[in-house]
Length: 328
Image 1 (cartoon, rainbow, N blue to C red):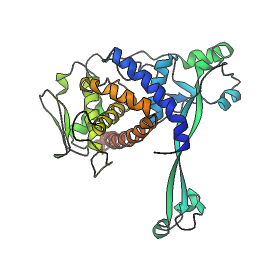
Image 2 (spheres, helix red, strand yellow):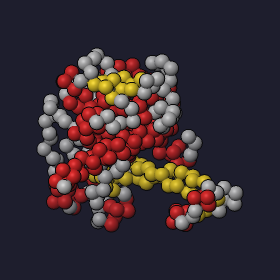
Image 3 (spheres, rainbow, N blue to C red):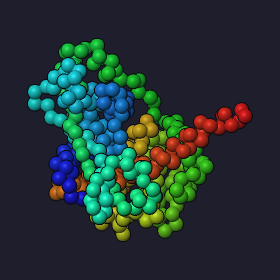
């Protein structure tokens, strides 16, 4: 994946993830996201960030020990009467912009114009995705605590942490499994391992009662669900042949990050799987040698997470309609 913008921002992403993985090697059972009381990363207006940005900004907040994951641009700080502290380092937030061009003439067209074309006319145009980014600062990197103390206090007021030591339930995931509405069958049974079989297109996972914490069960389930998104007929990732080869390790990293992202979005923290401890050095080496490696992985994480949440949203929408249907 060669792109000047990606080459610019990838080293910052890789640097952050290297710091996080090095911290994990000191305490392997530490979750990917350690503090779930601050809410999801969001801008000053309260709009949450999405996909890979969400995961990276949660980790950034933890590693830099920011009070809360609230970010703003330099322009927004100026508009709000705030000053960025001297020496503060911005972090890139990326997004994809799609350009539409005629395949032969190369003439550009707006998305509004494109939508007015017939299906046959649309075939003459190519969609070219281009990554863009803008730098953001955390509110702790501004003078808000001194100049707007009441506002800062409101923004940094932590929610009371929930007790997730046991009994944690994620109703959307529970319904998805119970109704077998995922892209492949999910079998919960008393067992010592969890896995996705590409040849059988089937997930096997131990019972929730076998896990000491609900978050560990759901994290394992999301990990295997991520693997199941990668088959050729779906997102088409390469799984590798055996544990230890590069493609196998890469797929494990995609599954780890997707489970962490989905878990945090659903309100619980997932920890890396024990069997992936052997891959940490491999990941660190790859990230140091080729920072773009992480950005490429984040693209697959975004796609897998999107597929999972599309199914969860369908389930949650259906569940919301059930009481009305029953009353009718």
